[in-house]
Each structure stands twice: as C-alpha cells, then as structure tokens.
Image (cartoon, rainbow, N blue to C red):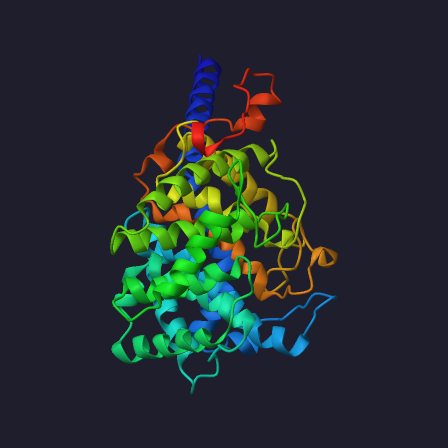
Length: 411
C-alpha cells in the first residue's frame, strides 16, 4: 500500500513539474530576450554610466581596417549609440516581471548618466562627434531618443543642450550617397520631433531618393545607385525610412502617399526576412556587415514593434523566429570575451568575417533585434501562442502557401 502510494505521489509530482516547466517555457520567452539584451548591453551601459567606457572596452579592429586612428576614436560612439538605440523602446515601456522592472530602472539610470557623459566635453567618456563614422553613430543616439521620449524628458536642460550641440557637429559632414543620407535624415527628424529648427531639405533628400529613385522591386531598395545583395535594407534603410516618415507625417501630411507605398514595401520585405530564417535560427551568410548578427533582422523586429506586420505573418511565428536568431547568434562559444564584450563574428569568434570598417563598437547594432521588448508584456506579440515560422513548417513537411513577388501596382 505504501509502495503504491509512493509511486502515485512520484507520478503526480512528475506531472506537476512537467506542467510547470511547460508553462515556464512559454512564459519565459520575454525573460530569455531580456537575459540576452542584458548580456550584450550591460558592459557598454554600466561603463559609460561610470565614465569608464574608453578605459575598459577592448577595441578590436578588423584586420583590414582602413583608418585605424579614426575608426578607433569612433568605436566608442558606435558601441554606445547602437546599444542605446536597441534598448530605448524597452526603456520607454513599463511593467513586466519584478526582475524586469528592477532591471529597467537600472538601465534608465545608466542611460541618463551615459548620455550625459557622452556629450560632456569635460567627461572622460566624451565621445567623438566629428567625421563620417560619427555621423552614422550619432544618428543611433538620435534614434534612441526618438524611440524613448522618456529619456529625453529626464535629461536636464544642460545635458539636452549638449546633446543638441553634439548632434549639430555632425551637420558639417556630407553623407555618402547611399543609406548614409538616412543617418542625416534621422538626426533632422530628431530635431523636428523635439521642436528644434531642422533642415527639411535633408529630410526630403533621403525620402525622395529612396521612394522615387532607388526602389528596385519586390520589397527591396538599392543602396544608392547600385543594388547590393546584403541585409542593409533591414539593418538601416527600411527602419530608418519608416521612422523618418512617421515623424514627418505626425508634423504634417506631406508624405502620406510615400508612407503608404513604403508600408507595402516594408511588409513584403518583412515576409522575405522571415523566410530567410532557417529552422535552427541560422540564415544565409552573404553581404557586408554580416558580423552585425541579429542586426540583420532589425526590420522584422521593427515591423513587429510598430504593429505593422503583414497579415501573412503572425506575432507567434515572428516572435519564435526572432528568438531562434537571438539564441543562434548569441549562444555560440566565443561570442563574448571573458569580460563579457562581444567578439567579432556571426557564430562565435570569427574575425575573418569583418569588413574594413568593423570595430568592437560596430557589433552592438545587434541590440536592434530586441526592440519588440518595447511592447508591454501583455501585448499580443508576447502572449500569442507560439507558432512555427515558414522554414520550420516547410522542412517538417507541412503544406505552406507559395511565395510570390510583389508589384506595387497590384499589391
């Protein structure tokens, strides 16, 4: 009798434990994202808040670096701006688990102190705001402040003035005639959003070139005069273009027609990106800046964050696909140094993959895959039932609707 009772008891405990583990598995997807966000961002944010980023961040450079001195100076702004742009939507939101609330409070404090140090000429971590690479990464600071009005509102007036001055330095730099015109555009959009004088010609330039001249079809833009088969439509072009249009149409209706077409294009490209994610979270290794890791899926994350996913993509499948990318790219052995900084690579430590402009700081653009954390824990993106993404469906033998190219005229 006792033996039978013991067996029943053990079975009941086992069933209960299994049920609890299944519940945790579903409910902890957001916690898993937060764990990886924190693992990447903490060294950067904690150190710049303490005015120690330049002292403590190891600055690895590509073996093919084109200008060691200039790239080294800009590398710290790269790390800070790119990290901040990725965590800003989460900083802006509220709620979540007790752990999340506590962690967000810490990051808000670090972000405010970090911004203050980055723009204070007397601080050890005053960053480099002059030159081409500085233009690129100053735009990520501007993008972060666009994404988090809370951060901007909680900077004191002196620091706000210093942010203005730092970003203003970049206006002296002529952007390269490619996706860089959107970096200048983001900075002007920041000025517009917060009531400063801005240059509408710079805004017009970026919008007009992409929407009128550089769209090549089926959800993709050329990067300047030539089309490149890489991830820059996702890394930079489409999220930045969408952000600029959103701000400008909030302050007037000049670009409504452009915004409508860009949304159609953006939704098609979101479909393409989702289909590029393999069953294990890997994806085609092609094009420049492949060491940006999850930054290659910035646009898919952006479309989820802004609630613009096409009807063909559910929240559940996009969340699971992005989760697979996060785990694949950030859990590989050698991804981090022994002190927690990112190594150059896509799957671990692979310095040979670095282009001529890559530094340690460049790698932190991977934080932009985490922007859906700007949606509250109660949002459908987090609460919807997990669903397999396209590759999982197809390669498990399920029937899936065929993919078709999109023409703007018949979409």
